[in-house]
Image 1 (cartoon, rainbow, N blue to C red):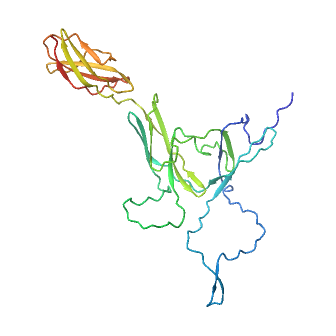
Image 2: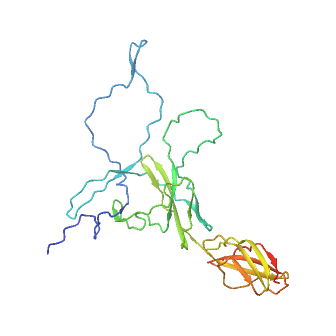
Image 3: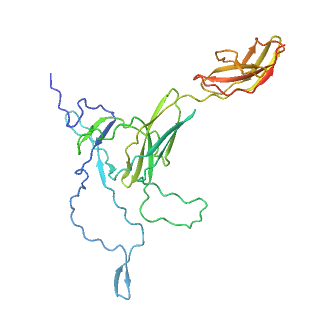
Length: 338
């Protein structure tokens, strides 16, 4: 029996399989944030002036100043990451392309997160942090402006992401990522936001999923810098219990026809995905209406064979959903049996 080959340093005990999605979390300390000074290259000759003109008053060629333009952008502090696959024997594959990560301070988490819902939609709203880099608001559409080309620093925009909670703790928040300068690789994928693109407004909506009884959300703020976006810590999770307290629509166009020893009723169907049926209510002489049956019926017709001949009854119909919510009563009709 041959011994198991040594695993590459830093790999998990079980290793990884081809096609696995991995998440890398690294805690950056002061040492990791120190800028790296590249090695000096061979000194090159000074470049010739980009443009020059002969000055008769000076009797020589002079350099022409470049036209006014935007200042050169200040480079963000950046960190570069690459991934490479290792065999069990430690042989390296091909490095991926470098991924640039901005080391600018992240914005504060959003605050005042609220979750509301109705029969069809869940709405999440929050307040943007004061230190979020927001895009410049466009002028009103009716504003009279001259044609112009903006000069200056490139615009820095901000946005938001909405996640389903519980959101995993940030790297190092609970010591899982180790001390400064170390990282932990775990099977992924990383939590993905519910929104496909960063949200420009502090709100998010999604449809109520069938069978879901509780939903929890966290929100992050994003500041975009030259080197890329920087995301805040997630806000505290806010949960909502999705209770069906929304009654179905009432039946319409209730009609009644008296006949020998009975009153026949007919109405239009109530549109409700979770409809359980209908209850027929009857009252006499201005009294309170009472249901003529305990269990909702699925049909949109009913024959009241308990009606006394010559007595005028008042009928209404209500729709009932599977959660027991009753609709408003339909239009009322009066009829008597013969």
